[in-house]
Length: 153
Ligand code: SF4
Ligand code: SF4
Image 1 (cartoon, helix red, strand yellow):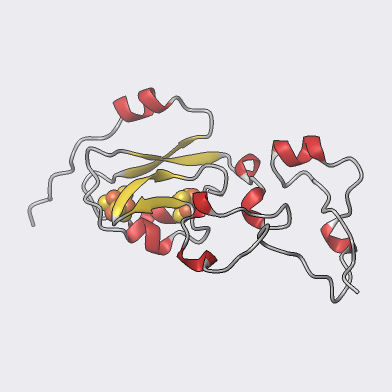
Image 2 (cartoon, protein in one colour):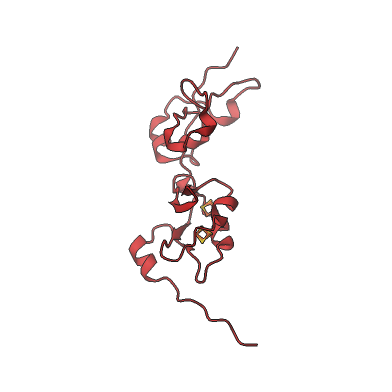
């Protein structure tokens, strides 16, 4: 029989879970055989739906924010981006928002600030750069570096 439980909101989950979770069980209390349903209702064709069209259950990691894990965040500069999709391919947390091969920005609820997207961005200067978690977006964009010239050999 499936175990009935609610997952505990712990320090590494988002503020909304923290506020919601008074009587919840911890992840280390989940017993073998427990079934955690990822989606509410009929999940037919769910793979073809966009994230915002899906109804995630409280057990799906998508509903948990990890924003509080970050000390620095990637900032996206639309003016330089060439929509190559490198960041989308390499992000280990599926936190690059892209539609129809156009880079739209960062999902800050799930981005962990690992910097991989910045590392793989090929533009000059990069279209993604890391800033302090609390940095103002407009100020960050205003401080963007100039294009680096190639050094003559
Ligand atoms: S910093 Fe890491 S987790 Fe965040 S968007 Fe970039 S690659 Fe993804
Ligand atoms: S890797 Fe850089 S240039 Fe390519 S889509 Fe991402 S932000 Fe744009």
